[in-house]
Image (cartoon, rainbow, N blue to C red; front, side, top):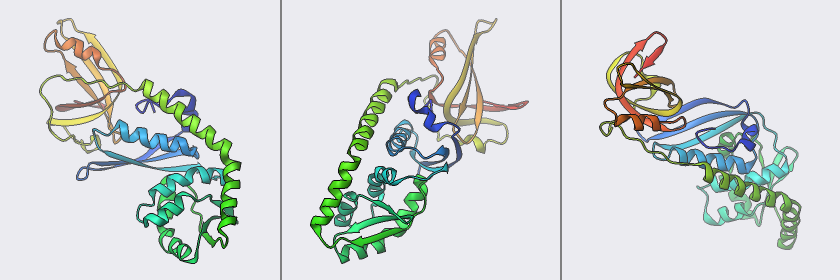
Length: 291
């Protein structure tokens, strides 16, 4: 949460949450986080979290995530807040059907998610093309696996009246959600600061996942999020910098000694929350793997 710069006033939504698994593909340079929370996130926070996750790691890999929840029982209003996100993920359907899905106002009927088609052909297309993609999206979003109930609205006027009434009922909630989203985005924009540090030769090697390190190495490249730092001056006059990093597969303690006085300002600029790539040798000391 700290690395993603999530504002403190919404952190309670992520209380007791944890990363169940991180799947990394070196070939496609993709990361996929599997995250578990106690309660279902509001749709706007789900969208913001996905966007912040992708933006934060954009220089490292293409990042995506899946959520699971201890309690996930969205009501009809919550389904309608999630529905635009669900519809935007249905990329395999035809443009006319995609447009119709974006305009849907869904209803919960007998533990089914009810959709309305404008005619028999559209209803048949929904039945054939939505079931499996909707199931996979629901799993990734952490939503319950509800079957779709698709009906044909014979009268276009009745359908439009239905949409209008539902829109009026949800108007205040939609406005509130939009304002909250804008407020959180503004807060995040103020907090995000980029910091670039460089010391020594440029590292062009691909990083090795920390979980793959099982023995001492003479030379290896790793990268990760800095979550602890310490710097001190030795009796010899040199400066010792130690910091801990994690790439979410494992963590490691890194030690660096200054070569001259010019290195010291760079070492002092290293702060918790940065993402670094480092190269060196691995030494196993007691319970630590040290680079």
